[in-house]
Length: 322
Image (cartoon, rainbow, N blue to C red; front, side, top):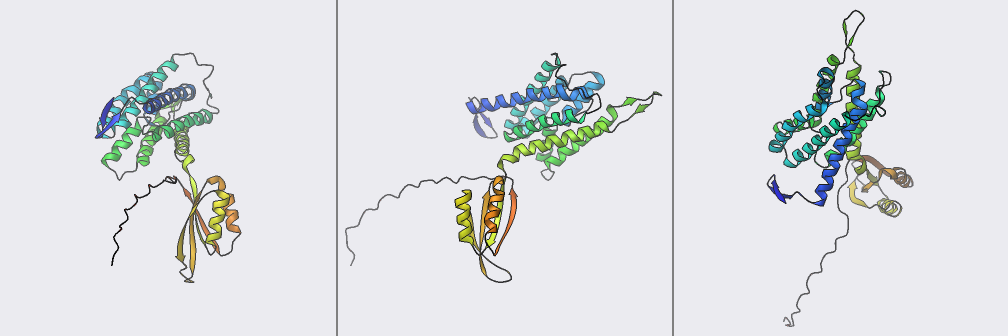
């Protein structure tokens, strides 16, 4: 079956799409489980729309599963028409899985598995829940999806005002949730006076930080490398050592010193992060060598040898020229 998405024909029922859909659905269910086990038993609101849903549940008893669904369905429709159809469908699938999973787990006896910190070591369930959220962030962003809520709002604002940074918009929205939690999770003093506490705010910000850190590591960690720019008078020897010992090639450029006006070789080499010590040992063998190391957040390209077809043989002209 084919449908048109953003002006292109896209096949819906393929093995690849089915696998991605299964992964997104499984992440939604796992995300719901992390809320039931670590978030709701410990009186703090995580980031985003789901954090608002948790606070509403604590105040009036309306289930997180239902409220998340009521908020994310119209947001997904908004994303379908104004952002990206594929993004909207995948995000909607995650939100459905999360809401159904939460409603299921909330009606199952999981008391033996819930983490009740009793206000003593609340930082641990926050870290565990933040790590679960970070895994969802990292995997979902890789497949053009999201957890819904503030992610959709931030992306929509970005389409209208491209100069606004997506992550800053998201941070601002999450900061509003953190501030709201200050007025929700209160205690009553001995004289009946309401006592406000900054602890829920700190826990919300910690949750956001852990989720963002883990998500970013999943997004960029497997694709990071080290880029070395090497200026040397031994370009040939160093290039050979990098090729023979590290099994990486390099790009050689001819450069000139601004002060000495001498010609020098400039090598650009990209190696694995685990090979940092090895390449620096190679550089230490040679004098008149200077290098700069940079982190390459993403490495792309196809370095396979592509066989070129030989040109068709030309017909010989038997006529001799005078």
